[in-house]
Length: 310
Image (cartoon, rainbow, N blue to C red; front, side, top):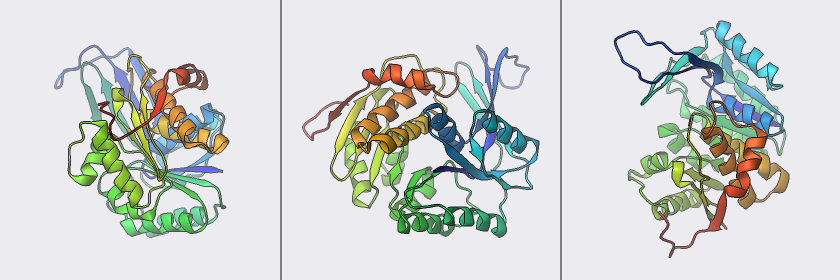
């Protein structure tokens, strides 16, 4: 079973309009309401790619119920822990520039954290635990380290898709997969990454720290992959980016879906890039047909130090 965990899910209210002007009334004729949160996105894409998963996390109030009902309508199992806080609504305004207003995540009690720990303890060897999205500063990093250590000891694939200090603090837990973008990778080492050579250099350092698979997404420049034995680069397929929200989560979903089927990191990397691109070209998350149509356009090649591809 694949378990995804979103500590602070949301309803994402996305509005499209030609221009947005602050301090005045703006009207939009195109709006969408979707369950938000990186782990939830991973579950939704996995479902579209034909894999079952169970969404974990914390949800409360009428917005929490909406998320559960929405995911159930897409055939996704949920096992959220009840929160006394109303699950947040995030506002995303798409115009000539993107503007976001994100609500606060839930305040969690020790008993609620204990419930999540119990759910991880009940997972079986070879299961997948995808911890994705922002991790609240109010929760000690040690709590997440213990979850990761439990997964590592019992042969559960631990996938970590977060950013900032939480990502840096959890690198020594030896995740199976992490997927920073080039900016997040640079933040880990205090540098600006402007080339694939740099991205490969620093991603390789993460592998030396014990991360098994590192994928770095680089927007329109494609992505890179590094493991102990392989280094690949992928060119992104051509297309008009409509909505980049969820494209990184789709990459993670595609990687997992292919890896489970083929146990081949190169194929998983290609499928992941196709999934991420397919989402970027839509207003919502990708569909299987989108991914399969783009897959032949994702060129994957080995990366050598002499390469000068930027």
